[in-house]
Image 1: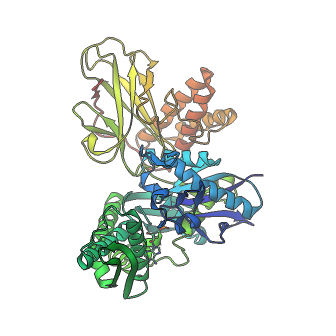
Image 2: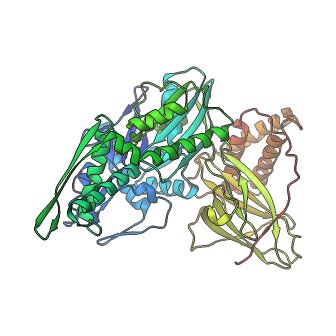
Length: 578
Ligand code: AMP
């Protein structure tokens, strides 16, 4: 039977893990290492190199080498290298293909599926691009899970006691912090915060800037516009940074860095840890601010944690460790390998899904709010950040002008009340609204965010009870199937029989739930039951399976009071063809 592996698809390095004889083990790559550099290169003689081989030739072939592609996931960047035109997911898929091939060689077995990790703070489009990369590499992507959550899972498997954890994850290109509670085998994410563009690479760039400035002072020669020299400087900067994690001082030597009028120009300078820490203090400070943000969102104080997990290669920097430990008074978890624990956690999640790991359940949250642009450019949140996943939320909207034939749904993700300041995810156009004065039509928009943190959108005209025609704006990345339901493979749908069994369970649950204390849960369950029944009676099996999945997750929701919100919901106006 084809195997399932866990993959940590890092900005700088990747790692893989698999269950062997009931335990997660790290899979070595073809070179015998536990981590594989996330580097892809196209050589002049037509070879495609991935990993260590690509990293080694980077200085000699800077234009043909791609690093840190994870930073561009979800963007519409197209890289042109020789004959190749590559999107970020194409590059990531080349890395995943190598990982899959190496894992197959090591296991002597086919690898069919994977759980892939992403930074908790990855947006919807970044998650979709990651899933596409996995599929392009021939993998069935069982689940996308968040890196800090995966790290906590690997720690949670070792310690079966109830506890509150804080995961601080500073990798090569991204930073995430997550607060988690482990109770009776259920690992629940309470809050998360982060920055997709903050990581070890930024520390390297600061040191590289320092080297370039010193070199110019010493020789009068600028390195701008010399990619080969810039690449060597960046590599030397990273090496110096890593050395300063152990040593108080390092000497950076770059012979033949450029050529001047009187011959070759060399660089040599000493850098102390104190100087390094001074020039990068703002980056460490930025992570502590986000740590505060996660605490505020969780309504927690910086004390009372049972363990602090330091994850990601950049947490080896003494200044980073000291800053976090100064702020959070909790023991640093021992036995957590910052390079491997994320892949191990991904493999454990694979084990939970396949039944290899019993008695553990993972409940994650949405990292950033999702919502729509309203008339005037405002942002109306539909699913707030840190809401437990999966989640289905509906809102009613209306038209802004008389006889408006359609509405534009512009979907954004972020926290700003101004839509344009958030990340634009895509635009859907709904047409066929009945002729009516402004404010009369009622359009119910439903956002369903699945367990992978991936969004699916549906809309209904409540007046006519018709599903509105949906046109996906093809100039924008498509986020869902043509009918607004999830694209294939978005979630693991239950079978028809399971959907029917779920309906029965849901009815029993509804009978038990209190109309006041459980108002919110009842409303969500009732809506999911109605949609599932409608789809089953309409013989729309795909829709039934989709809503059955919503139902399943509604049933698994923890038993917490969800009373009726105090303020009545307003109808909000949506724009048309701006
Ligand atoms: P990751 O994405 O978790 O593989 O982390 C990679 C980042 O960790 C890169 O920016 C590395 O330069 C950085 N890194 C690895 N080891 C060290 C170290 N000993 N000291 C400082 N940074 C390190």
